[in-house]
Image 1 (tube, helix red, strand yellow):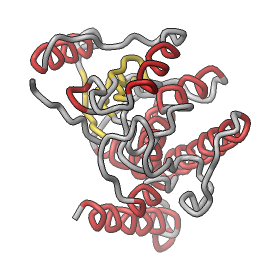
Image 2 (cartoon, rainbow, N blue to C red):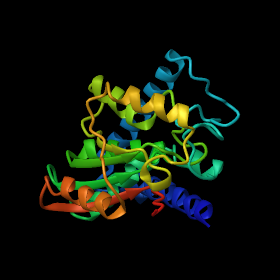
Image 3 (cartoon, rainbow, N blue to C red):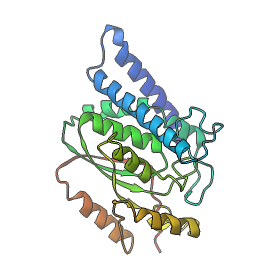
Image 4 (tube, helix red, strand yellow):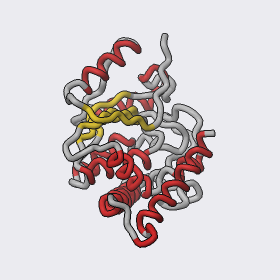
Length: 249
């Protein structure tokens, strides 16, 4: 059902953008910003692809048929759940960045408005499209990311989604990026990760200036997320991409 919903959304996005461009003689009122966000997403995707090549990370072109750089592997040490390859391919479409702009403008959001964002690493394409839209509109995205990913998402432990955004920000290609993270997966602590890979990952992340959300249990996790978001008052919207699987002990 999720796959078909994404198919329909992708088709709808294409139709909306076609009408926005052709529009029977009229462009959509937000067409220029929609196009800007789309073009930014294309640049970000190309940069991630190039960086994966630089890091000698294998890109399976049978999986990533569009060479987006945003399709992961089937199973890795940080793969959390099953995932649909077609849905992951569709989610790399840069038109989603334009779609996010359209929807955010429809909600009446304006420059400097605060948007709370929770995203897993299962749909890196959608994540980057949202960041492209936020940057284009000058919105302040308060982004919390969980590292774990379902199949074919950002599940290569050598270059996780948090590191992708950190890399793009270091090159001044994006303004909004991940600023707080959890491991994701079981209990949001990666209990189903490969232990050796998890240990290596945790050590590597100590060198990144992005704090990890530490918590005692599910309730504490939720309360601390709310407290972190609360540092940035008067939010206009909350956006969630992907899912986090909490396992209560």
